[in-house]
Image (tube, rainbow, N blue to C red; front, side):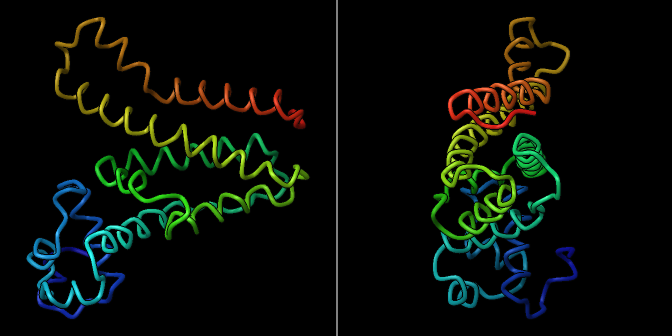
Length: 204
């Protein structure tokens, strides 16, 4: 929904959360405030504060909008390796679409909403794959440890690559290439191979 169309209208909490995500996409998490969202939407600062309670809860509402854009669900006949690759790539796509807003995913613990519900959707991708009961939690722990760090580093690398352009040194290019689609896929394969070896999991 465009900013101009929202101005002066009574907005739902979901619409305010979407507006908050748009603002964070443009300005970053630290810039988000009730006053700035009020300026953008025309909804009073007090109304926004009463609905969300704190900037942290407003940020979590915006994060929920971002996570809901990423469709994570079981796929019939998919192996556990295929599920890990698919979910990892979906997360990377989310980070590339929202390079500034992705920091919200890092700031909210995995046991709090909306990350908790997102994690449950990730768990569901492995429900029919005949894995040991504890394995989805092991997968989630591994991927949650790897993905945010890689994706933030990739965002920084992309920003710096754009800044220096053709003037980038060979050394700088080598560093940038640590965080690309190719290196991401390679790292995922290392994680998959390590999990299969450590837990004697079925292989492809």
